[in-house]
Image (cartoon, rainbow over all chains, first blue to last red):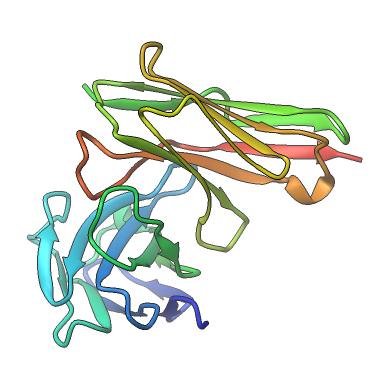
Length: 115
Length: 112
């Protein structure tokens, strides 16, 4: 079974530029998550989708971050414009369904450096 | 405020010994608690889940305990090996919600 795929793996941009990350979850997984992991910290949930609907985006800085999952499969996360403090690893995860205790399967992440 | 604290940033132990990692939480009411392993440059990998009504869970050399009165989980790796060296993250829900809150992690190094 293929795991969660993410691209690109690394990205370096200057502040005020825009950037987009892509995620392909495990086939058949209804729930998709985007996390931000700053160096030395645990992952922090940004947004959670169930199929193509948003379940929780309370931690998403909506003035600069946006995410979509148009067909209920792949997802993109965009930052526009980027700030220095957005430097982090952006992790995508998926789970089979939306239920308490569901195992989340993580992709390798995209490491973003904002200069 | 809500907090999830893992006992130390880094833990070094000798090969063959038991590693014990601690996860303490404040102002959460978790229905379950999970432990993940994260290697450098990779995403977290699920290890174990324990529910609020369970005291202990085991899987091979891993053991997790969950004390909702102390608001603490302990994660044990017995007969530790250098290959166990990684960062270990605890994660929990809040009142049965479907999203997870992660601790900052403990970086374990097993010395041969």
